[in-house]
Image (cartoon, rainbow, N blue to C red; front, side, top):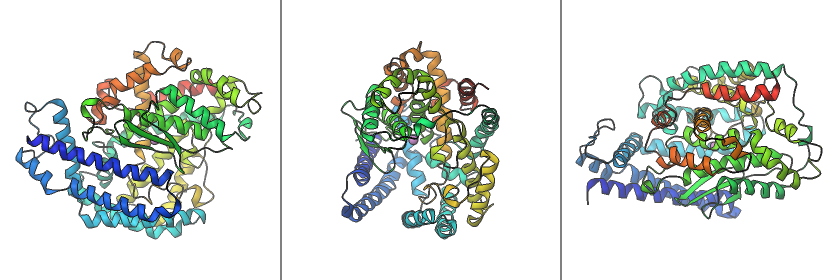
Length: 503
Ligand code: CO
C-alpha cells in the first residue's frame, strides 16, 4: 500500500473513533438513564485515551518520515493531488501538535477540568467566585504549560487559540476586533438614545409543543432532516456528527421564552447543514471537518441572524407562528413582531445578548484571557477586571459573580482561546452573506417565500463541500476576495438597526 494510503486509513480509523465517542456523548446528553452516567464517563475516557494514543503513535510519525514530510509548508506540490496535499498538511499539523503534549499534561487537564465542573457550578449557585478560584488557578497553570509545550512566536495565547481557529493568532484577532468594538460602540450609542421597542407581549407562556412544531417546520424548510438528522432535547443545545449522513442537533424549549428555543433550532440547524455538506471525495477523510470553529459558527449565525432575524423571513413565517399562537399574538402585527425579534439591550449574560452587543461580550473575554494567560493578571483579579470592562463596554455592572465572571462554563472546561471564535463567526457570516446577496438574485424574495434551496446550494458549493481543505483565511479569500474584516458586519448591523430604531 502506498504510504499516503496508509496514512489515510489511519485518518479514517480516527474519524470512526471520533464519531463513536460522539455517539456516546450524544446519548449521555439526551437519552441515558441517570444511573448509567458513571460507567458512560469511563467508556468515553477510555476511548478518548485510545484516540490520543492512536493519533500520536510512532507509526504515524514513521510514515511521515518515510515520505520525507518534515514541515507542513514544505510539501512537494507536484507529487500529490490537491486533496492529498491538503490531507497531508492538515494531518501532519494535528499530529505534530498533539505529540508536543506530554500524556501526563493531557491527563492532568482532563482531570482538573472534570473536577472543576462541579466546583464552578457550586460557585455559580452561591454567586461566589472565591469558591471557583483555586480550581481555575490550577487550570490556568496547566494551560500556560500547554502553551509553552506547543510553542508560540509572540504570545502564549496564540498556542491555545490555534486549536480552535487554526492559523489565526492573537494579533490578527486584535486587528479585527479593534474597529469592530469602535463601530459597535458608536451604533449602540445611537440605539440607546432612540425609542425603545415594546416587547411586552413576549412575557406570556408559549406552549413548548407548539414551539417544537414550528421549529421543526423551519428546520425542514432549511433543508435539514432528510433522513440524515434528528432533533432532541438536552440541557444545552449542540450539534453532533456521527457520520457523513448522520448529523444530529439538540435544543431546549422554555415556555416563558418564545425565541430561545426557536433560534437555537435554527442555529444548530446551520451547524448541522455545514457538517452534512462535505463533498463526497473527502467523506471519512480527516478533511471532513470544519476548517475552524469561526467558520463553523459563521454557518450557524448566518441562518440564525442574517436569515432568521430578517424581516423577509418573518414575512413568510409570522403568519404561521400566529396561527399556532392565536391568542398570544393576536394583537401583534408583523412589524412589531420583527422589531421585538431584534430588540437591542445591554445585558450581562452573553448567551442572551442581541446581535449588536454580543461581540462586545466576546471582546471583553478575549482581552481578559490574553492578560491571564500571559501572567499580566492573576486569577484572583478576575471579578474586578471583569466588572470594570463590563461597565466600560456595555454600560452596566454585574451585581454578583454569577452574572459576571462566573456565567460561562468554558474556563472550567479548560477552553481558553475559544471565545474569539464566536465573534469571528459573526464577522465571517456577514462577509459571506454580503457575497451571497451579490451572487444570488432576489435572495430576499426567496427568503420571503420560505425557500432556501438557492442559499443552501451556494453554501454547499462555496463553503461546506471543502471541509478543512482550505484554512479559514484561504477560504475567506477564495469566497469573498478579501481577508476577514469587520467592515461587512458593521455595515450589516448599521443598515439593519438604523431602520429598526430610526436613528
Ligand atoms: Co454555535
